Image (cartoon, rainbow, N blue to C red):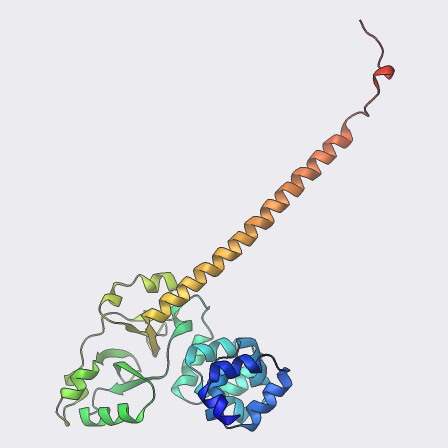
Length: 275
């Protein structure tokens, strides 16, 4: 079982989706979170939410910490407020802080789809220390954001520049300007139209006050935007169909009402000859 879950997380998720939720919860509670987290990330969000409800809080927060940020947010939106608060209270990390912000913005905004599993630095860190942190970390390092004391992004580092820098060089000396910063509440359509995407495949996302939340990937943004458009198209088509159906039902009702007001039809024999 362990080997299948570890090597085929997507296939394992499809199998688990055919089992009673209580059995899935029992499995997620019994096996190590490092193995089951990848399977959990491939479950449909409603079942993943049932798992987070069913396992104990320690296991739930451990699983939550291993999900990517957008999936964690999707699952947390489907658990009760009480359980969501309890899980986030145990997730005292940058990711936990990011999730608290993400959950305050709607799904069709940039902030709902950020990746909080990314490396950030302060300008005083040396190039050698930065390289060690990259080697030890598991997050994305396409761009490394440099933050000020208020956790606001002020510049970023391109990895190949960091690799060529002398060990003692402060990263502030090799950092370059960020082409654009998105706020969490930016609508998907506006975020996608930002011209800075021509310069970078990722952009930082901040709160309204400028605090860093995470990075938004252009490809992810494009996929989510297209899904949102398709979903709204289906909703419009459904609403249009309902309106059309309602319109013709209304027309039929009016015609029936009008017919009821007409005098009864008499046979030709009953009509007097007025010639």
